[in-house]
Length: 163
Image (cartoon, rainbow, N blue to C red; front, side):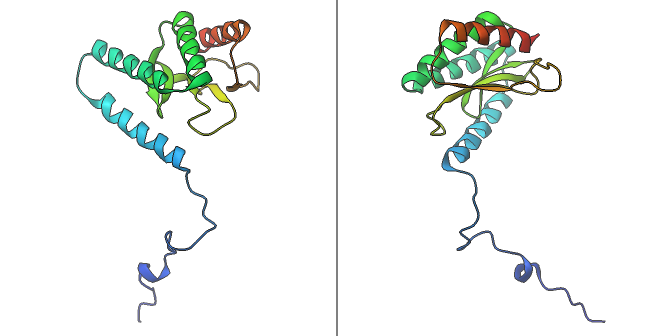
């Protein structure tokens, strides 16, 4: 009996070419993935835990300094609020944005509006955050500016999330 299978090269659909219907990752998303790969390589380097923590915090502070306008101001304030509310959370970069982790797992993060050309910045929580309240609760917040009330609310949420 003759084999009737066609070679893979003639049956597989090409992902390149002129197929205009494919909506892949945006340039910003690809950049974020590249940054995440760099972060993983950097965290794999040998060194003491204290050295790594200091390097990661310095990287977060440097990333915040690169931000422009209101994104930078909000990121600076959030960094201060998180450090004051949950000092046991360790600053680290996560997809190129400031994040705060407990036992190596990201609990909360800031995403600038500028990075993804969005109309607002985002402060969010991962599934590692201890925010469960009934069957439904918010996991991220849109930010256009921060008031003292907003900072207090973020501080309370971060404290609960890290508990």
